[in-house]
Structure formats: C-alpha cells, structure tokens
Image (cartoon, rainbow, N blue to C red; front, side, top):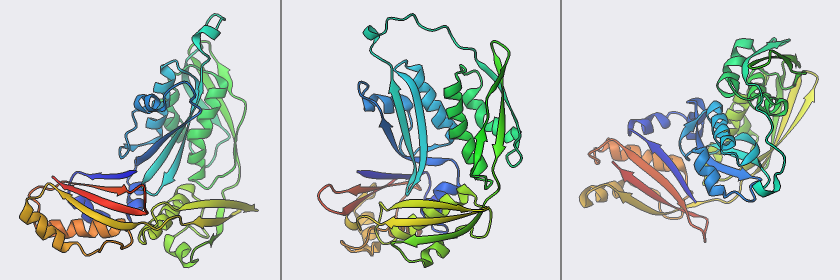
Length: 346
C-alpha cells in the first residue's frame, strides 16, 4: 500500500508544521481522497467503477463532487441505485460507494418505464438552526434537473443535509413527507422537524491516555458540532501517528442525556510502523549526500509523518534542491510493519 502526499511548493510544508497534518487537511476544505471503496458490485468490475467515479486518491473533493461521481455511475446504466458515504481518515476522507446492479439485459422483459419528472426547486419548512438558503445551496448542484424518485431523493436528504444540521449541534432531525407540485419540472417542499441543539457533555477514551482527549480539543461544554468533533478525532489520529501508529481505529459510542451528548471512544491503535529505507529522487549525487546527512531517524524509528516533514523543511532551508516542489510517499512493506520513504524533489 502506498500513501501519497502532494504539494506544489515546499512552503506548503512549512505551513503544515504549524498545525497537525491531518487537521490541516480537514480545515482547508475540501478534503483529499484517501481511498475509494466499492460495495455491492458482483458483475461490474470494481476497477471500472472507480475509473468512472474519477476520484483520484490525493485529489481534494467536497461532498457535492462525490455526489456528482455517484451521478456519473448512475448515468452508465449499470446500476439501479448508487449510494455514497464519506468517513474521515488519517490522511483525508474515505469514499464508499454502495451500488445495486441492474439485472442482466436478457432477464429484463418489461418495457422501460417512462421518464420521471425533473426537479426544479426544493423549499423547506420547520427548520430553525439551518437556514433554508444553506440547505438549498448544499442540494442544488446534486438535485436541480435530476429525475425525481422519492426514495432516491430522501437518501440525498440524509446524505447531504444531516451533516449540515450536525454542524449546528442538531443530531436528531426528521424529514417529513415530501410535497410535490407541478408536473415536469416539479417543485418539492420538505417539512423538517429538528431536535434540540445538543451540548457535548463529556468524552472518555478507552485504550489511550485521557490526557489525549484534552489535547485533541473536543468542544466540551459547547455545542456538539459534529465537524469539530471529527476534527478532534483526526487530532487524536495525528497524535498516534507521531509514534508510528498509522492505522488506528476508533469505535464511537454516543449517549444522549437530555440536551447533552456523551461520547466514549474505544481505541485500537493497530500496528506500530517503523521507518525502513529512505529513497531520494531528483537530486544530484552530491546534493543527495547532503540531504541524507540531515536525516536523523535511524531505521527502526517510529514512522512519524512529522519526522519526514521536518526533514523536508530542513532540506529546503539548506537550499539543497534547485526547485520548490516535492512529492513524498510512504510505501508499506507487505511482509513487515515497516514503511520505506520515497521523496522526489522537483
């Protein structure tokens, strides 16, 4: 497995050193794609689905762009439905497409259904915390001009709008019966029932030091903003990555007490990876020798991305490369918990 990180200019590295790497990726929206996973495909090649989705690892994307990728997959005619899910990871966002394939052509005997009416606008009622303009802005690029099918539309509401409410501390929201007016195009009205604005009452950590929770800066005592909570979990991941734990997992349990949310995180740190070989490209032999003398981590040291970034900064500070670009890769060995580092100066 290869972990790719790309930056146009070495000065991007200096900026990263001021804030944890994974947090920077989250704060500077959109998020880079860490991996694309496909579930439910039996006859269609996963590689072909990933190709059509066109979400390259390392490429920054927003939710609307992932929804557009799902639209591209639907446009192939291969699937009856394409759902997607976004999950933050240590190096960006994990994109999961769950597909329902159409039956083989020879098994379809019925005439194709008539085209469905297309969506013109969506309005909302009953919402207080999330403004209607914001909700429509999130939906518009995905649903405007899209054929209306209620189940498909409700899935889009869940996928795209629940996070908008969660960023405002509203964890419980119900979308009522969709009211349809017009024939083609149609105008949709969605009644919304919001739950209370929740406060984050506490966070406990199993499998790690509780002090890490304080260092991660969860919004304790404040609005339970889901985005800020996810940022704090990414800071926890970065804390583990400093010691070579590159693939930790967290099982999150949430308990609602009145208007408070209490969270329990069970940490599985996974394997501790260690540095292997340092491979350098793009430097003349003399310059490469100078750069290697600045590398301070011996083989077997914990594979911390921060160590690599500090070294890259030192190489540029010493004016060793002639260009300003750099590409780095963590290459995981298949037979051992070791990562080799490949760095190319451009």
